[in-house]
Image (cartoon, rainbow, N blue to C red; front, side, top):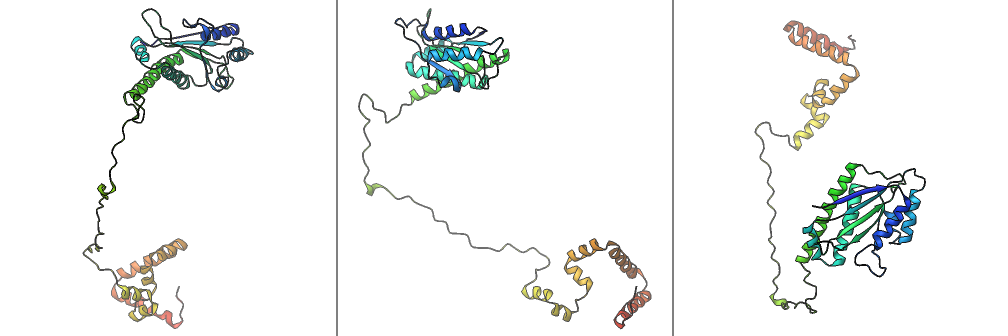
Length: 304
């Protein structure tokens, strides 16, 4: 089971001492060496692990805040994961842990900034047990105070385990599939024998001829007009010869004209349609009389 410890305090002086502790307090460091410090956020990454500058920046971030919150995290892994890290190179394992810490804070606590160090010493019945000490600044990247709720801390815990296992599995997969171009025992792998050009066969391409053009079958019913029929209906002289002139025939050829007339004077169109319907339903003598009166229009008599 992965373990993540999260605590906070309000003392800038104590934060400076914690930076010194995580950089120098290590069972393998007996002659004043220190662990490399890595930044969280753009401001602390720009310091490139300068311990004194990091301490000054942490103290300066606490100024102006009544109760500056310095969060400290300790990230650990379980025993099976520690054994898997022991099979990797020290620098490769450090890179996996470093990427996991940065991705954890970026996804679960976006905007926080601070510093962390990776410790690889073990303890009781743990010859190699990597863990991380992280100290966060009391201000976020946008200068607002840092606040991590219990829910945010739980998200950090879950994200830490996910990122470590994912990065570790990727590195193990790369080790299981080494690059063929890498030298083995100081010697390059033998190159395959060259194949003469005569033995190479040209690729075979399948040639497909386009299908012949086929007209779709005509639907049964009225046949479409040919060019002579179209010319006949479009030429006014031919229409006059055939006796197909008049307002009714023009409206039948162009329904848009009927709609245009109805939009200009709907009352007139409705009156004329009613008159035509009444004429069609009237007896034959009355209908013939109406036709005779309508023919008088050619004599100059105006009808209303």
